[in-house]
Amino acid sequence: MNVICTICARKGSKGIKNKALRKINNIPLIAYTIKQALSSRLFRKVIVSTDSKEIQKVALKYGASSWFLRPKKYANDYCSKLEAVKHAFNESENYLRKKIDICVDLDVTSPLRKINDIKIALKKFKKSNSEVLFSVCEAKKNPYFNMVELEKGYINLVKKEKKNQKNFFYNIVRRQDTPKVFEMNASIYIYSRNFLKNGRNIFSKKTSYYLMPRERSIDIDDIFDLNIVKRFLK
Image 1 (cartoon, rainbow, N blue to C red):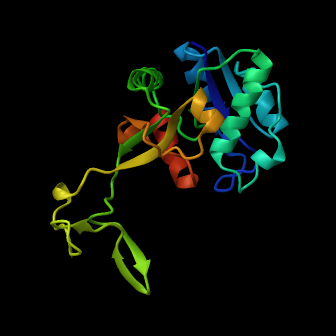
Image 2 (cartoon, one colour; image 1 turned 90 degrees about the horizontal axis):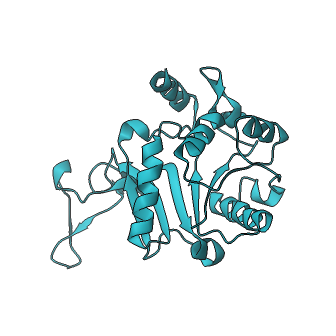
C-alpha cells in the first residue's frame, strides 16, 4: 500500500507573516512537521506543497521532497486547503508514476502532535474503512450551552436541544448534560485515493476522527498561539 504525506505551506499567511518559516528554538516551524513525518517512517514520500521558493529551500534542507511550486490558483485566499492537497496528490502520482492509496496531510501550524498520533490515526483510518479521517480534541465551549450567535439583533444559543421531537426547545442548564462535541484541531487529515479523486465535502458518511488531548491540539493562528507553542516546545 502506497502512503504519502503532504505538508502545505503558502507564503501568503495572514495572521503571522511568513508563519511557516518563523523560528522556534532556532528551528523553522515547518521543520517540526517535516521531522515528525520522516521519523514516523510511514510514508513513501513526504511532500511539501508551497508557492514559495524560500519555503521550498527550507523543506529540502530538512529532508522533505518538493519538486513543484504550487500554482497561484491553489495558493490564494479563496482556495480551500483541500484543493491544495488534491493538487499535491495528483502531482505526486504523476511524478512517482505510482498509484497512491492514502494521503496523510499534516498541518504546519500544529507542531505539538506526537509521532505516535500520526501512527495511531493512520492505523485507525485503515481499520475503519473511512474515506476521510481528521484529528479533533474535546471542545472547550459547547454550542448547546455556552456558544452564542447573533439572530435579528439578539443573541441566542448556536444549537438548541429538541424535546420529545416536537417543535419545542429547552435550554440545557448544566454543561455535563450537553451532547459531546469536538473541535477540529487542524493537525492530521487522512484521505483515501477515491475521495481525493471524486470527493468534495469531508463531512460524508465515511468520515471518522482521531481524538487528541488539548495540550497537543494548539493550532497557530496568531502571535498568542505562537507564544503558547513556544512555551510547550521549550
